[in-house]
Amino acid sequence: MTFQLSDGQPAQTHVAAPGESVLDVALNNGIQLQHNCGGVCGCSTCHVYINSGGDDLPEISDKEEDFIDRAENPRINSRLACQCVVQAGTQLVVTIPPQHFLGH
Image (tube, rainbow, N blue to C red; front, side, top):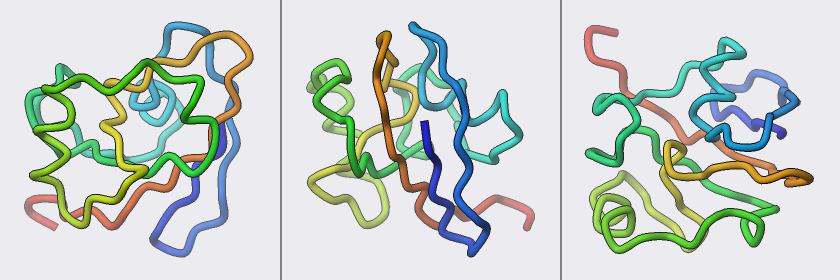
């Protein structure tokens, strides 16, 4: 899985185990990605853009789609990182949009 970061840092590529979410992979590799609800599809703070490999992800649910509508700058390739569960052989390229951390 390749993460493209919007803050100018170089892209990072990490191995994802089947069953892990994009959020899990990011956090396990020191990539800051907000997740105010704890990764249970209860907010839109882990909003990302799936640039490639999205066809290998689970179909978007109505609940996830509702939260994406509340995200900042949603696009057709927007997903919530907590809901993007990796399957064996999935090759993803993910962009993390600018985030606004409270207290920063």
